[in-house]
Every structure is written in structure tokens, then in C-alpha cells.
Image 1: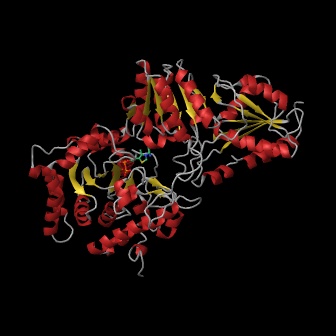
Image 2: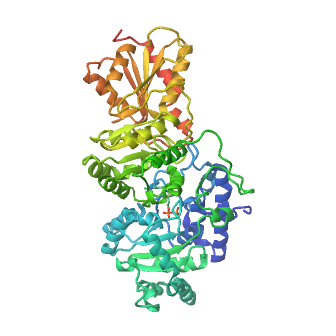
Image 3: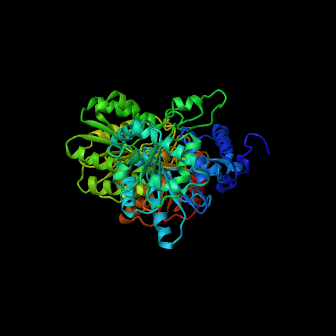
Length: 639
Ligand SMILES: Cc1ncc(C[n+]2csc(CCOP(=O)(O)OP(=O)(O)O)c2C)c(N)n1
């Protein structure tokens, strides 16, 4: 078959690569790159990270035998070449779409997705687990972990390297070093890697490895010994010991991660080694698509774009919560010099990029180190500073013990700001912020609020700045933050809900049902109440504002007045807002008031466009209308 993917379309599984000559593998790489450009420009997805791993993946998969060998990808946002080399070309146009293939690796999606991820820093631990399992079972397959220069700086990666150095088992760690996280990479380790890249004696090594390999016909296990004992040491015995060698790895590199012949030579030999190997590959994010090479940050994750014009569509519409937070942060910080902001490698994602420019000395990017970010914030708070720790809901899961043990037990006034709380859409289950109401509400001392719109976000942030009696967190969703509700607002007070009442047009008389909504769901509740009003059902809407402490007094009053309640939240039901409302009412003797809890199910919600998956979970105005109709049609326990 000829055509744009002449060779790639013949590859169903990576061992098919063994049939191709090294020259043909260069063509395979070109086709993989083209398939990424062709498809991601249609579907959106991670772009620059995947263009950077094309040659690395082709070389690895041609040199190793998958299966039975195993490759574990860190995070998975750079594993589209892996998907394309494992027979998923025909479905690649469904990438990240509802019921299509995932943007990350998933064990249930493919047998060669050996280990699923989405959060960074897990690959070396998981790969070491596979290697130890192999040793336990007495088999002899090879195990490789591929990790990025930002992911490798995370605590877990170092815990795993430390362990691997001691186990001295057969494992290969490939460092995909492109000097970039999403934004430019940070931290002392980054500076160290830069030093490694620039050492002239080390730069010669890859070439030496290649030259020697080329002199040996056929597979070259003999060279493995040379590599194992460090070509490095052969060349410059004293100066070239790297930190990776010091902790028990044989270090190979740096190698040009786009030079396929060199990569093939290196991996074919590394595969023969039986001790921990560390291959340092230098890559370029966005490789082969000029604008993405020039600005890989902008092209990290993209929406569909015009691949010929090489342009991303202009952003329009209402500002996102992220942007509103970023602006509000600058406002509150301008008024209080004690305010500082912390991000864990997500300056753009959290909206702190402008803050960083405005207050460079009051801004900390700690890298992919959410656990450290939280305890660092605890230290800052204990030292008399007002830290705002901006971490996505899903990534704060990493820091549960730091929130509990370092912040909350000591009642330290750390301010947590959780973007992407709720269903995020195309990134799927690893990224949905589905749990924070549950995992934070169960911790004593912390307060948790959720704004209903942009204006309320600003007001809550200001409230948080002035709240110094203990830890406090705010959650808000991915997406636009327009103000959609009626004019008029009540000021933010600690632990107090806002009763919005029945929308205009609902007629006179007492409401017969109340919808108690948290944060992102307030606008849906309001829309539902508007529809119900048209049908003559008077539904009162309460903007809960606080998941903790609950405004039990107001909720009890509303329950008595309306006689039935629906709670709605973008968090799992178990341990969530609704269950707490039900408990609070029961404690006040109102356990018989009919109450329906609308929340995320006790399962991992799949990826797909936000409106589609919200609707599937019943988190939409239409779904709320149906629930309210059912409840108001049923018998009443309270008049
Ligand atoms: C625990 C965690 N924090 C933050 C992120 C968000 N994130 C996704 S990719 C990425 C950068 C990864 O950089 P690197 O490991 O160098 O890989 P590259 O993108 O450069 O290939 C970040 C911060 C994440 N996925 N997981």
C-alpha cells in the first residue's frame, strides 16, 4: 500500500518494525510525525511533546521486542507515537473524543499500554515494579521507563531511582530531555542536566557508541559490556561521573534524540545490558513543525487548528475561571505584600503567568512537586507569609497527607486554589477533579468554598486573603466563568450560603422544592429552576458557597420551607457535599425531608467533551429538571 502512511499502516504491533531496514525506519518516523500533525490538527490534544518523541519511540520499539519487553511512559502525554506503533492508526482520528481512544495510556485500551498514567512522575516506580515482578517470576523480558526532564525531578522519580540503584536489576531509564516542562523547566536538577548536555567529553560519547557499534556486524552484545562499564569512564575517567552513575546506573549520553541511526545503535546495545541503565536523550519539543519548535509552550496542548496555516484559533468568549483567578490574584497581592503564590509546574494552567511577571519575587514554581508545594506553603504560613497554593484539584490528590499532616493539624493559614475541579473533559479520568470536596471535607480545620461565577471567584479570593485563622480552599471548574445569574449579590461570609430564591416568572406562593447547588452547578440549578417555573413548579435555588463549614442553619430553614431538596455538585457522591447536607439535616431532626443527591457516580468518568459527560452524569439543567419533577410529583413528608 502506498499513500501518506505507506509503512506505518503495515504496523500492527511493534515487532513489525523488525522487518524494516534502518533506512525504512527513518521513513516510519516521518510517517508517525505526519500522522500526529494530520490527526491532532483535527482532534486537538498534546502536540509538541509528541512530536519530540517520534524517533525515540521508533528506535526503542525497533530495538526492543514488545511484547514481551515492556515500556512504561511517564504521564503519557508524549505517547502518541506509541499508540501509532501499536496498531491504533485506524482509530487515531477518535483521539480524546467521547468513546474514542484516550489521550493517555490505559491498560484497558491496549495490552501494550503496560501502565496507565496522566499524572507525572510514576514511570520509574512502575517500571521497577515490572522488573521486580519479572525477577520474582524468573522470566527475562526487558523493562524500560521513559520520563521527561520535568517529571524526573518529581519526588517519586527520585524515590524510584534510589530504589533501582540499590536493587541493581535489569532496567533502563530513558530521560527525554527537552529542557521544557509545559513552561520552561525549573529547578537545580534542570541546571545540572544542562551542565551534562554541555560537557564536551560527554557529547562525544554518543558518537563513539555509534561508531563502535557500526564496526561490529549483527547484534552487538559484546558492546554491552563496554557500555555497561561506561564508555564515559573510558574517555574521561575522573570528570565524567554523573549523579546517575553515583546512585548505581550506567549513564549513556547525551544522545541526539532525533538521530535515529544513533538511537538504534544505543538501544540495541543497551538492551543487552543486565544492570540499571540510564540513557540521556536530548530532544526538541515540537520537532518537525516549525512554529511548535519555536513556541512549544503554546503548542503543548492544542485545540483543533489549521495545519497548513500553522495557526491556533484565536480564543474568544467569556474569560475562563483560570484567567479571572490570575487577574484577581494580582489585585489582592497588590494590596498585601505578604501574599505569595505557588505553582507546581503549571504557571499557564493555573493562571499565574502574569502574577509571575508582576511579582517575580513573590512567585514560586516548584516544578512537578505538589507534595513539596504544600509543605513549602505550610512553612511559609508558619513563617508569617500568606501563601496561595494554586494546584489543580486532581494534582492536589498527590498532597493529601501534606494537607492533612503539615497544614491542617497545625491549623496553618495556607490558601489552596483548585482549578479544574469537576469534569475536565477530554483529558479524562486521570484529570477530572472529582474528589476534592470529599478528600478535603473529611479533614478537620480546613474550610472549602466554591464560587458560582467570575465575580464570586474574585470576592472569595479577597475573602481568603483576609482569612488567617486556618487553612482554606477554593474550587472552581475548567471553562468559562461568565456571570449568568440574577443581578444582586450578598457579601461573602464565612460558612454562609446565599439563597437565590425562585427565578422570576415562577408565580407566587411557597416554593415546593429547593435546589442546593455547589459552585459550578449553581448556574445549571438556576436554569433548571427557570424551566420549572415555566411549568408552574416553584423551585428555590440556594448557592451553597461553602462545602465546609456547611450552612446547616440556612439549609434546615430551606428544607422546612420547601419540603423537598435536591443537592447538586461536581464531585463524587461518596463523602461529597450532598451526603454532608443529608447528615446535617438528619442531625437537626429533618431526616425525613425527601432529598435527592445529584453528584458524580462511584466510578471513573471517561473522557469526552465536558457538556456530553456532564449530561451523562446528570449534571445538567435538563437532568435537574427531571429530578425535580419526580420529587415534586411524589408524596410529601412535610407540608
Ligand atoms: C503530578 C502532575 N503534576 C502536573 C502535571 C501537568 N503536566 C503534564 S505534562 C507536564 C510537563 C511534563 O514535562 P516533562 O516531564 O519534561 O515532559 P515533556 O512534556 O517535556 O515531554 C506537566 C507539568 C501532571 N501531569 N502531573
